Length: 266
Image (cartoon, rainbow, N blue to C red; front, side):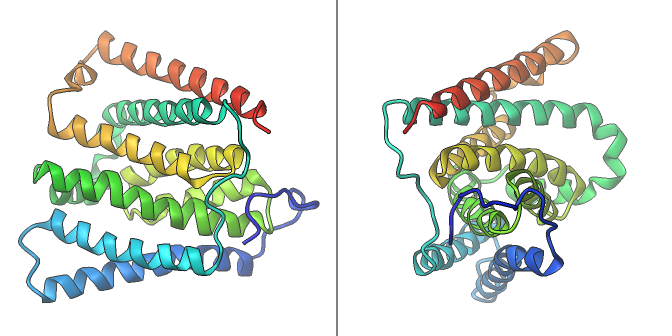
């Protein structure tokens, strides 16, 4: 893997279908491993708890892609040092969390419009939410984000960067990330999140910040669904709109500040 280096001519070069398929292969293989592990554990009798089944299947996928990352020398961290590295990473994590809050707000507004297209999303939500909170955190906030960042911002994005500009690589990897959720609601959420995470990887040269940000965003979503800690975000009317606007402004502030800090890192 060549990492995140800019290559001359990539911005103007047209991405071929062969290059797209090469980049998408790890994501497709991830779906195969995930579903194969799922079927295997169902065969063994682990079908009573869907969230436990998901956690076990994702863990198997994570083990494989960790091995594959080592085998292929996947670039997972930047060699840059400096006192601004961790503050910049913190800013990016907060920006992604705020992006998640804004996305959830938009869904609550648009849900009535896309309700007939969102039945698959509700089936997914029923399978994963309202179960064991600890297992939800392990499966959805730790294992899931870790393997998804390895696959989509690691293998897919890095492969795309070998033959395309940062923008094209970010868009195509985000589109694939959204499509692999197999429902309209999560597609929109994952696409927007994927763009922001690809930007973070591009700026930092490290997957670890993207992994931490993805974990934090998913944790907020789980706590939003399962506890009353974030009930203030469920307010209707002016409070709901105000929370969304504040989150959007905070996202822009932290993202901009993170970018400025990143420029100071050598």
